[in-house]
Image (cartoon, rainbow, N blue to C red; front, side, top):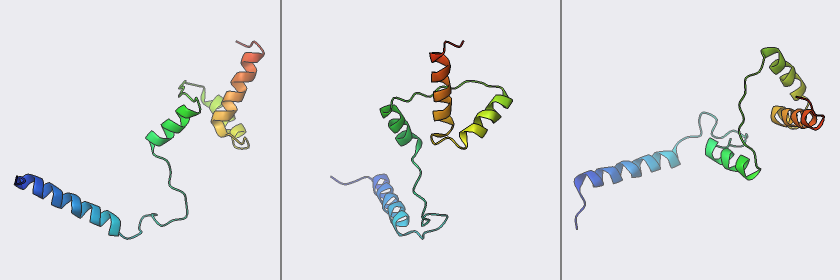
Length: 95
């Protein structure tokens, strides 16, 4: 069974794209020493495995600035800081 001409052209294009990706020069930071950042899908899977759920809310700009300032020295960053503050507030019965 012969392949259609369009299928042959698609295969040629795919081979060409794969060859250029493999043989391309290390430009635009590809060869840098920084570890590759996780893409969104991989990060979402890791977050779900840890039981993390995205939770968006709107806060006053002054409060956000205070949180960011405190989070600079916090080992877990903003997410861990906000989690700790919420846990402490809920444990104290604050509303």
